[in-house]
Amino acid sequence: MTAAAMWPWPAPADDGAAIHLVAGTLLPDIALEATIGPPVNLARRTGDAVLFVYPYTGTPGAPNPPNWDIIPGAHGSTPQAEGFRDCHEAFMELGFAVFGLSGQSSADQRAFAERVRLPFPVLSDHTYAFADALRLPRFTAGSVTYLKRITFLVREGAIIRTFYPVHPPDAHAAGLVETLRMAAR
Image (cartoon, rainbow, N blue to C red):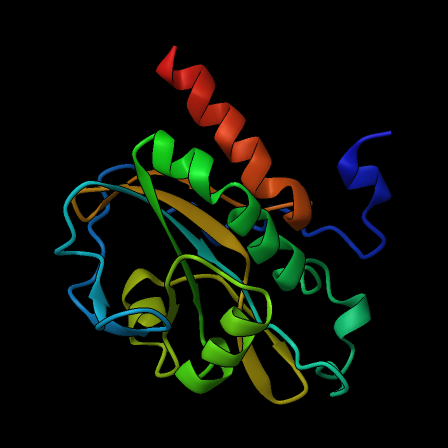
C-alpha cells in the first residue's frame, strides 16, 4: 500500500492553479518575518533552497477551521513540516536550505516551530504579499483564505521546479530528497 493510500484525508487534485509557476519564475522581492533569525528575502538569497508552502498548523486543544476534514489537501501541515525536519540534514548535504511558508502570523509560527523543533526558518506571509505576487493557489475554510500546499526548488531567487499538488504531505520531504539524490547521480 502506498503512503497516499494510507493518508486518511481527501487528496487534492491538480486544478491547474500552479501552471504559471514554471522554471525561471522570479520570486518576489519581499522580506518575510522568520521564526529563526532576521527577515528572509528569497529573491535576494543566493544558493539553492526548498520552499514548502502549507495552509495552516493548528494549536493543540484548539479546533481546526470549519470543514477542515473534508477539504482536499487541507490536513497535513504538521506531518509535512516534521518530514522536512527529519530530512533537514539530507537537504543540507544536497546543498539545499529549507524554508517553510504560510499565511499565519510569526507568533503562531514560532510557537509551532518550537513545539515540533524545526531547525529551519518558517516564513510568515500574513499579508499575502508574497502569495499575491506569485498568484499562489488558495482555498477558503469558513471565511478565512489559506494557501494550498505547494513546494518550490529555488536557485538564486528563481524557481527551478514546482511540485503541485503535494500529496501525501507526510511523505513529501523524503520523496523530494530521493528525487534530488537521483538528479545528482
